[in-house]
Image (cartoon, rainbow, N blue to C red; front, top):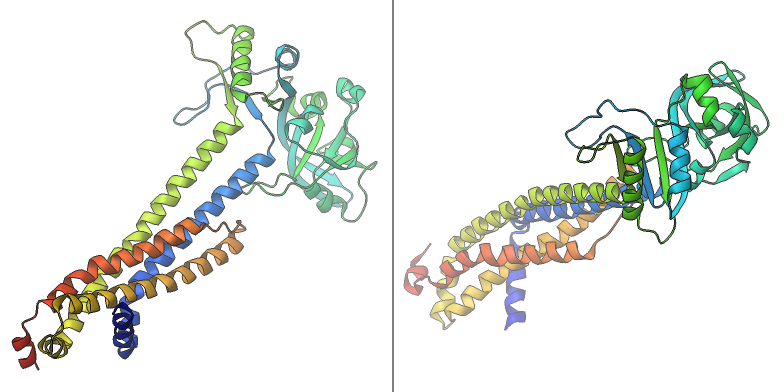
Length: 401
């Protein structure tokens, strides 16, 4: 019986193919939009996670002043080399502690020049960032202590300034400072925020402080926890040690900020998750609009086929059979729209992922949910027209023209 009912429903739909397609257009758009939005959102989350992972493993950022949502940095004493040394010697479960100062300067080689980010640091920076060298070597201890003008360049700087030439051993200028290129970093690519990580030059900390920055301050400190050590414990140890060194009174707020990369990652993931859910919910409104369209057309169909319904009832068809026929028609319409919407949504998501350089993360669960919801829309919005058809008076229906 069900098989025959489905066959009759398909025939009725195909008799008015254009009207049927326009009827399910709302379902197609709704399902397609939901799948596209959720898939793009998942891809964005995956990219942000991968980009943050490339910044380093078990990483904590330490900066003077208070930073966070709704508050700017307060006036706070900057860090210095003694703070870095104290963290390196007194913290347990730490793999590396790297001091950071940064400035924007012009890198020049021959006739080529490029404005880039100069980072003053030491070899610990490479450990905190999990960054390997593609060529050359790291800084020597003598170069770090003496503040020699040696530099390690990123892949973007290498390609823009040196082209096909091997940069290691050559001299370039950073503003007016002549600097020997001793190494080239492996390419990391762009972050999720569009920043090119390879557009950078590393110099010994003292060199950058004396010859570019003009003071001995340390702007930030990167701390990398050892494998198997909880970053929360390391964060607590850093806060306790810095409070002692900076003589912060008990009960007063810290005049520095320690941020855990895991916390940043969780915050970003939660944010993109909320935005994805919001976009999916907005797109889901189209499904309700599509359901109303199905109910409207099914009511029109009942009116057009009143005489047919009267004949079926007069020759012995039960009300439940008539109700089932029209209900199946509504469900078949919805499922057909859901199927087209799934294909449309996946196609749009793949195009968007390619255009935005996002990974295509397919979630089978959202496809099942969208398809099931389209069927539910057919049942809910098809029930009233089907019930109206089943309750028609056979005599009145036969008289209908």
